[in-house]
Length: 147
Image 1 (spheres, rainbow, N blue to C red):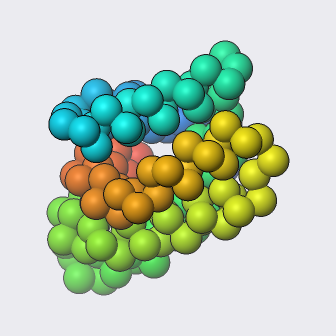
Image 2: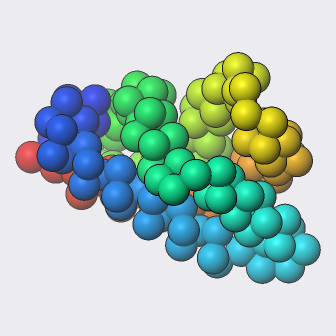
């Protein structure tokens, strides 16, 4: 089992993981329904419209910090001999807290008003949505951390 941060040190693997994370984001946004889903889709669309490749750039930039944030959970899964994906899913609240601490800090420093505004509008429902994405995220992490 490899450490996610170590996996990301290989530029080819990092590019593949970034692509998969972007696809995961697109799928999660697409799956959202109702009024909150409409707000998420609108906010995501606004952020994607900033410039071509903006979301991919942000994912690539945040991924090493996200790895650092969830590596302790991956280590716990290994110690408990629980599949990483399953362990992350069982601890989805902790995963969400770790990831949102990183995005909150980034958003606080953001200079782009569209990004800042979209994040601020959607932050209230973020934890619930990140928790909902953890099963897909867990599978992605498990795929790339298996030796």
